[in-house]
Image (cartoon, rainbow, N blue to C red; front, side):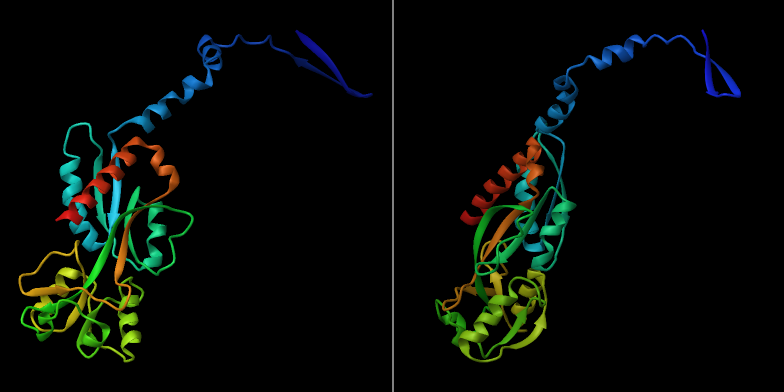
Length: 259
């Protein structure tokens, strides 16, 4: 129906108004769907026990936990772990939770807690022992003190990595500077260098692979333990698959500790 609109005393404009179009039945039907039904696909996704769950770990934790994790999740319908290695300084572990569902990280007993932006599940509270060549004179002792080991050549991690603080505590307790001759982060390489007589080192008791030519002795007089924690963003555990993987990691930690 044409409509006449007066826009000014000297001008008249005619606009043709079309009749309203009927709303398609599909669109009308969609508008009446309850929000609970629209949210259902998201709920189904979150509640699925399967699906891919990304996990990152520093090297010794990866070597210890990943075989257990793969065996535990081998059944059909289990989550599919996507495994990665990330060898970073202690402060760089929490940011990795932006890229992975779960991050295995480590920190020393006396280190500050993890950032409040992440949730942490403690898996292991692992002793750090002194690694010696098999025929070293100090293997005759059942336990070692900072004074016993302070005059030895040392193999340590790089600055900024968690174990370095314990090495510094040994030097402080012995009131002398340690002779650091090699800096190697990978414990498998450290074990080979220790076995060849290249120095002594701190080694984790449970997660590092045993070397036939390396002897571990407990260290007293300083705090020599580390936490191995599973870090994740709080919202990640809304997925059932992520919770299943966390439970598998906790069971793996029990097996590692017993072995």
